[in-house]
Length: 234
Figure 1: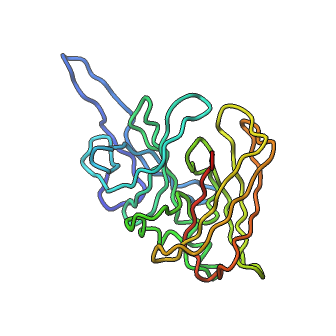
Figure 2 (figure 1 turned 30 degrees about the vertical axis):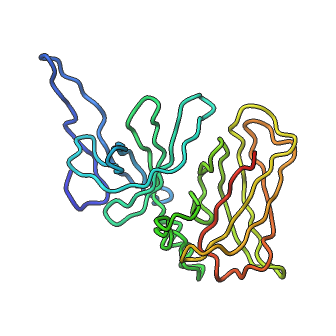
Figure 3 (figure 1 turned 90 degrees about the vertical axis):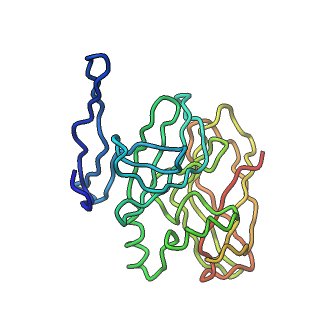
């Protein structure tokens, strides 16, 4: 592995104990041939609030987000970090390993720039202000946990005569059936200032089902919105 390269494969991940060798798969970053999207495998160091290589000779600061229990029963956790100048979102499979499978957010930022919008993740570092900022940037195509075993993806925010429309998809990964599942969406500007909120409901929300949602947040100008937060209201 050469320091400074974006793509790499970590090698020689072997330890010796009592003359017995134990070999593990190392960390790596590769590029998808079809999409050009970067993705790979890292290792979590939660006590140090970082992720890095298997050897631990290269680590970066990480933000560990919400935990959820998957349909397979294991506990997973969202992780956000930048590796050699590229932003990644990862899933930490913390029940039985230290592995973090991650994908880049770079493709999203480029798409937003081409569309004439400033990428939300460029402002997302404001999480240090302590407000409930989102776990997911606008329009990210893979599911992101929002807690309580609900996942969100494809979130888009558009102007509306009354304010803005927030639309996307929610996935029910909880056990059971909801005749009426209530959620709340909150919007913030780049300085973590609260802009507005509204509640919305999804009827007959079954386990393992993905449902679209659409809600108007009144009196909020689209240009002011930098981040959002969606939560389940039990």
